[in-house]
Image (cartoon, rainbow, N blue to C red; front, side):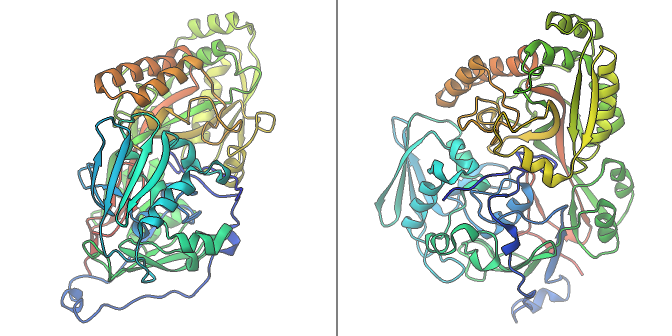
Length: 540
């Protein structure tokens, strides 16, 4: 089953990273009628104080609920409430059991064994089996599917069913943050029967979704709303609120008004300029949480000029990050001090790269462009202030003779062009985007996103960056079990990415900013830029 991936990085990030799906046709998405479930008799005790429905809104519709395919925080916010993983993060961002009641690592560090909980049911009443777990991982490992997760888990050698409740994953080499990886949204456990039944439409309509999570998906009207209802048979603690409704509102002003008027209870993707006003509203809480991503101008290293490392170094010294930060991003992040966020394991503060025009001109001359050159900077309104940042950067580059024309693309075009294109098809010398770690570890920030592409396309390595020394450091760190040695390797890799051979101009390490009514209690705001509501309640 061949599919092309298109990645979104939703204001993080994301991101990882954030993604959309061009290989799967989203027009098949269900338009079944909204189904709101009234509180049971037991729920009525609390109904006088709490509402039975929470409405939340982001900038765009869910792209896919095939969790191995989707790569954006919006889709993750839904899938993390519909599916479960073998393990998960708790409220303190620590790994704990989920579908697996226990797990252990072999003495040689190469085999993980997971004992599944018994009696877990999918939403349709079918029992979860160890075969479903094996199928999920084998599907993720199949390179023919074109999933982003495939390269992320390429340390996995094979999977094995030990008995009716025990599953093993055999690694090619020891990998320190493996449990963190298993908790990522990519590895929710799927129902084999549903995947095989729905084929390429799996994850694109309400009928094809069958998880084990605290909420069931009951309807999905494209670009209008997704409706979730509490899973009364959930094996864990039952969700606090009966119904959840997700309504995408693309326009930021409309989304903010919807929050202020009570039409929605929670929003994400807030323009920087609006944050102070929302903070002054006594009825609204603005949450800012340190994330795991950075925002930067990435280089298309397949471009004839940008392939020259000296040119990329020159541009880095020509840019005044402090000016861009003050004008565009102050209040929603900090100026970058490394090629990763400070919340990522392996981070080391390398300092802010200060503007040095003389050094920039010297590097440009050394690269063979003493009089500068013409280039383009690609942005999209999807990334707040990205075009304004590009305008400032263009003015700064002009000071060393570089003429940079700005192109603003619609989000769908932006996503399509940086998703599975070959070097001949991709023509973006400089482009704005976010990047983050799905594991909270430096491995997730570097491997795949910045190591040499294994597919020959820009799936994950969007700008075709390639540095052999970096590859060697990242893959050595991947198999290193000594945390001190791992940090040493990542520090060397970070110096390459930040100073010696930069893949982009790092601007800010981002924070996840969300706003919600004061009536809403205990929404889960993940540092991975997704949001869930299984523990949330809303006062009337």
